[in-house]
Image 1 (cartoon, rainbow, N blue to C red):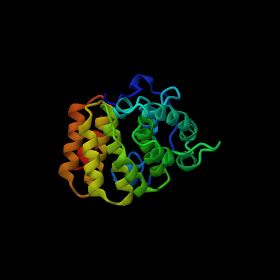
Image 2 (cartoon, rainbow, N blue to C red; image 1 turned 60 degrees about the vertical axis):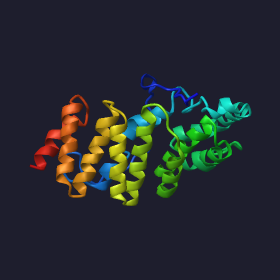
Image 3 (cartoon, rainbow, N blue to C red; image 1 turned 90 degrees about the horizontal axis):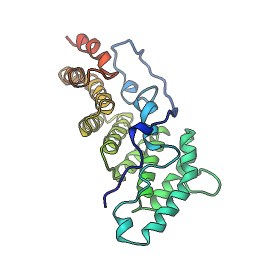
Length: 243
């Protein structure tokens, strides 16, 4: 049986994400790398954690096919979910270092849960949590490693994985790899929120790399395919700047 997601978009709750300063004003056409990978008041601040958390439940609480093939995985899955609660609590508080390694009360962090309960749905979810936590802590190589091991299911999670990988590579300065990940994220899910958000990152990063044609193409796609999105409001400004 395939992994299933325990949340839907209509269950989103508002949770404040860690914020970063941007070096360029919102009204400027200047492209800065922090505008590409930054967390402040963008998709991650508005949606990323909210997609992970729905009424206190964790991502992918229903185990994968291994839970049905091997009976011992069922109690391991239940145990993993119970062990994960404290780390998830710290994650919701933006206490990423505690969530990753030492959430308190004698409970393991996401790093240990991912290792100890590999093969369970909760163990797989812990990989993603660990990746996002590491990204926020500036541990970009670790974030990439966790996210590479994460196996997403459904429609939203693959795009979220690729997009978060894009941020990690952008922070590392590997802009070519970051652009590749952003393109995958944008193409993965035809969604009025996710697709234009990552297309904007494609556009901004393409412009930063001197690919005006690629940037313009991404902005035009946002304008034509997602005209009601927030990103579409900026499209004409950026397209005009490249003419």
